[in-house]
Amino acid sequence: MHYVWQHRLLQPRDMVTTDGERVEIIDPGVLNRDAGPDFFNAKVRIGADMWCGNVEMHLRASDWHRHGHGSDRAYDSVVLHVVGADDCRIELPDGRRLPQMVVQCAPDFSERYRAMVDGPSDRLACFDELSKAPAVYVTDCVTAMAFERLYEKVDRILSLLNAPGGNWPQTVYATLARALGFGLNSQPFELLAQALPLRVLLKHRDSHLAVRGLLFGHAGLLPDASDDNPRVELLRREYAFLCRKFGLERPQGIVWKMARTRPQNFPHRRIAALAAIVESGFGFGSRLCGVATVDEARALFDVELPYYWRRRYTFGPANASVSTVAFSRATVDVLVINVVVPLLYAYGAQFGDEGMQERAIGFLEQLPAERNSITRLFAEAGVECRDAFTSQALIQLRRAYCEPRKCLYCRLGHQFLSQKAKYRPGGNI
Image (cartoon, rainbow, N blue to C red; front, side, top):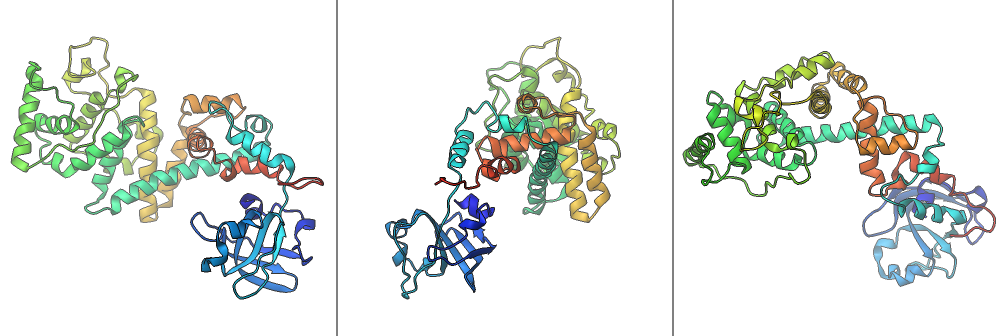
């Protein structure tokens, strides 16, 4: 009922009160998700009078009494009662009879909605409709979702920048650290960056042992004293010394996820790569602002790992098959998507540089699409994914709308469901 009212999907012949007065929706109002009437500040014309106030909805008119609205002063400003069944009339405390209107939907609308939201989680709820949808619907949704996902990342960046002690170098460092978690370990990396600010690391960038000892020690990844590896013992001693000298305490709550994870995605090599970037002086942010092409953006992540990590995934025996470079080509493209693009866009937004923002969007359109379970799911429904702009949109659509079953708030879901919301003779709620 909220959906039908909010999107004005009622038939003109149904826009009449139970007293026979015509109703016109000038403004449906703002949907209220908290206590109180369902829609705030609506504007409706009832007969010859214009009413500005709140709208309340119930499946049955008698629910007004069952919910105790008669004794709740928050409902005194209700100007229209929208119901599914007119089983009683309502009078307000001042004696005014509350105008009441019956809303009827197509009989299969609710059934179709339930079928979508209660369907199998491993299949798109709108698979059948999506495979037949006009291309303009899909294109419109992809554009909106890509920008929605980018804006979420930009908002996170600006919140870091505006936090106490925030500045651009620390913001870039924290954004890079979070991205190195690649979803699975994003939160632990973010906590590590908060607990060990860039300014602390840069004070010791001339000592590889200090930077790596601090990062691995604060991350809780240094093996205990029973490990007789000389390299590990040096890092352990350096970390203990720096903690005593500067009063540092290892943060609590950093939990790394490594189960069912490929060794190359373990956090150890990612932290080693972060250490290498810091040890170089962390000119990452200034270099990032000057990138003009996708290849220049990729070059930011051309990082050589320290010798120790060129043959290891963890603090353990050497493995001759491990790569000497920190990131594969596919991994670099993901980092450009999650680090370079949102930082460029955020910097452009902060300083009014539209050219920088356009460049960020251009990178998404030039980068190849991400290949994962989400893009494959949409490909099965006929949605072609040619670039990162589209793959980012599909990831946002799946995670923000499909998985939580917010079909009513999805552009595509609205298009598909609105066709079912029209009342036909014989229909009811």
